[in-house]
Amino acid sequence: MEPYGIIPKIGKLLRSKEISCTELTKQYLHSAETENKRLNAYVKLTPEAALKTAAEVDRKLAAGEELSPLAGIPMTLKDNISTNGIETTCCSKILRGYTPIYDATVWDILKRQDAVLIGKANMDEFAMGSSCETSCFGGARNPHNTERVAGGSSGGVASAVAGNLAAFGLGSDTGGSIRQPASFCGIVGLKPTYGAVSRYGLIAYASSFDQIGPITRSVEDAALVYDAIAKYDPMDSTSSEKAQPAFSSLGKDIKGMKIGVPKEYFDGVREDVKAALQNALKVYESLGAEIVDFSMPSIQYSLPVYYILACAEASSNLGRYDGIRYGARTEHYADRDEMICKTRSEGFGAEVKRRILLGTYVLSAGYYDAFYKKAQNLRGTLIRAFEDAFAHCDVIAVPTVPMTAFPLNFTAQDAVETYLTDICTVPVNIAGLPGISVPCGFGGDSMPVGLQLIGARFSEPALLNAAFQYEQAARRDVFRAVETGVVL
Amino acid sequence: MVTHEEILKIARLAKLSVAPEELDSLTKDMNSIIEFADAVNSVAAEDSDFDNSNSLSNVFREDKVVPSYDREEILKNAPNQEDGYFLVRRRM
Image (cartoon, rainbow over all chains, first blue to last red; front, side, top):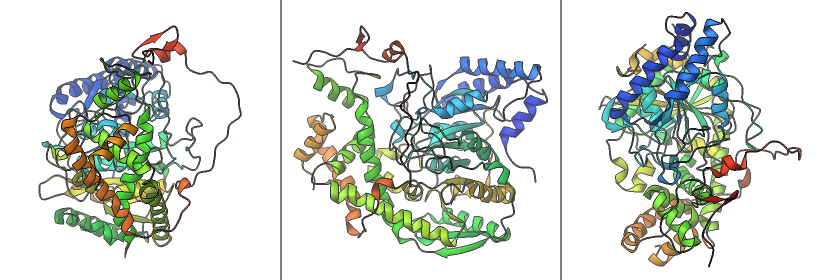
């Protein structure tokens, strides 16, 4: 069966000169502009940069020069990925008007490959949220049903890719922010191993959790983009040389592969979501994989561990927004202290403030041992639990989210209620593991459901192949294309 | 339970101001969030090597001068600047 990648498909159209890159880019820019009124996926379109790159690709094609694998591919970047000369706001009022003077390493790589940036994508403010609705520009909508959220925090990228307004995008995942919106929008999202992809130029939320990764239409596309961006970078001191390319592993037989299914991940999961997951496991069995049921009690406290540690890191990382060096500054103030306080209080939204306050609280004298240190120790326990699990299975299969896409205005409700929906995605970030969400069917509300596969550190080749084999076997039953945007 | 006073103290540490009319609802929110976080104290945990959860080793580089960013370019993002410096109001 032919793989489902749209990137190779576009590559062929360009190389066979069936369409020029400029013409293709114009189609995407036009669709992005019209459909954005409905989806709010983009917070900024970048036609000038896009058409310039497209012209360069057309020149190379005319001259018979070789093209890079991602040359001419229309794509998007989450608005926390720094783009030299293009405003980068994290969808926060505090960064409006901020224009980076350097490129994030991932964007530098894609630029050198002549990838075509259609625009910067919507996100929850500073990547803090699960619905994209904490964005100061309003949330992105779900292309499968615009009365539902696209998910978060990389909701804009997922909405653009599912709505055919970009062939792929890069998001960031601190507690599920790539996998969850990919699941909600019925597409593929890969959170790579911590250290596999450079974080240089990614505006920090929680530095020991943050990781950049692709959001794509298919596993084949995810592997292509992963291979391009998983490079050692001296500019990120946590960057690793251990990442292995994944694309060449796609298609390997998975007969005898052991797929671990930890029962705690299914507690509180909606019945229709559970049913879709059970069907996916049956597909794996039909492919010759072996399902291994086991128990991982430690994931039960992963949510508080995540929120304590991520918010502690956020309270420190977001200390830099003081209205002095970049971003917005309050207009009226008496002295410098008031300037900083007012700038921050006016610039940050409610969810960002709550997380800064929680982080400050757990790091403050008297609470540090009970919260921060305790959570760090439990982080160690969770890492060991995953190591034990991977001693007896090759990958772990669980839901990405316990439900399908929320109705709009979900985050207006209780904050803790929203945090609880991250239960299936945060353990991966706590342990620094790679995780991928692939579409695995639909809920009773006919919204997409995601299957999450988790691998050991730097096992992306085997992990992506496991996802690829499922996609090859089940795609027709579990994927639904949206008929908006550029349909190729 | 976290009190109004504690919330104000934490907000001061975080350089955030809390309007009087926000204080009640923020204290309520923070109480439910802290109660949720406190679940970590219902389980036992061994001490772990918690500074190195991502199994990384330290990275050194040679102390070599490399080109950096242009001062004027950096200052373009500042809300206020003068003579190559970030400008803030004089501290009283």
